Length: 81
Image (spheres, rainbow, N blue to C red):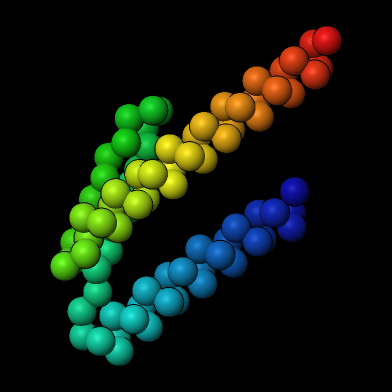
């Protein structure tokens, strides 16, 4: 569990560093993302391609929710039966 948390932290830190490096080199950056509150997505974006980035974030987030749902149903069936 410790390794998984460390890997997640490293991925987030790397993404943040890449975002800063891109903004510093080209003078402008597009940012987009999504925050899920329960099953309600709140998408945000800024810059020329911010909308596309926000849409991509929603698609990836929805896919992750579907995978988690399928896994939880699968493991519940294995554990119960």
